[in-house]
Image (cartoon, rainbow, N blue to C red; front, side, top):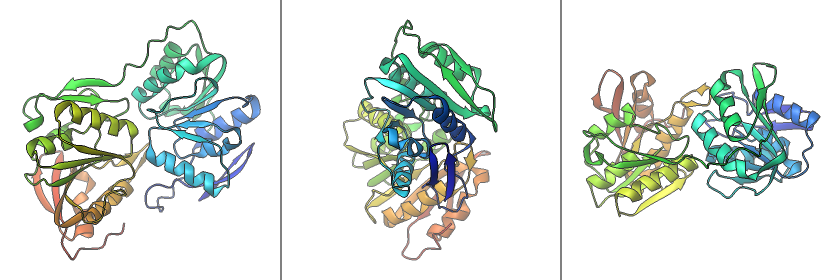
Length: 382
């Protein structure tokens, strides 16, 4: 826990993600710069909307103005709830990008997301609520603000400029142009899978904005699909993205019951659209933190391609949580299949969590690993 000092108060904040030992703060210089500017120059009366708040620092600091926070991340919303409670404040309304947005926005605060596609989608969806007097302020680190970023604000909302850099952070100022024709978001998009990837060859995939590999099948998933395990039963596609892997499991065995899990609202929406477009089989779709909503000892197979970064931070906390959560959810004899880059060393972690790990397939870039839940297993701490 650490303290964020702003002109509107001092706040104790935590990320509320990972294993709690990564030492990472729940805000950065862009959040500080943004909050200082808002406190010193912007009238926050009216409807305030915050898009892209990563760990709830902005929403917590602005809580007294009752903002609506729009986030694609379940983890970001959870962190926001934790930080609001930690500081004894209330007020923000937490929305996903798929929820109905306020009809009128007087102050629009945009913390730049990692994905340019997600920014494009949300600016399109927020634009109808913007009026001539709306104050629009964006924020990001210098490395996150590109010509293409500013071009999106210009094209969708109106004339845009940037501030001077402070602590390697910049602000974006946009003046609404009510003469811009509202075209609506181009997302979600679809594409057809290539041949040679097993039972899903030629199938149509749906991707909402910001979901990994929006226009093609990534090479890691392609590798996994070529070595999909024959075992099925109760299956979890953990970190499902657009749901291609879980769809393959369902098509390979009509008796399989597949649960799709991701912390991204857009990812789960993508998986659900992909699944229902290609099969009439029942599926379960959960926006949540890893395996937290899966009953202990209930699953036969978990398929997983763990992320190894969050924004600019790289670490193994998410993989640890996915592996330990999978072991908890699997019944004895159940299997976890993990695809990952060779250099990530997942075999070491899997042996510590499960007490075993087998190499199923490999190429110069990827390894496909299998761990089996047995009655006795190694340490499950990170």
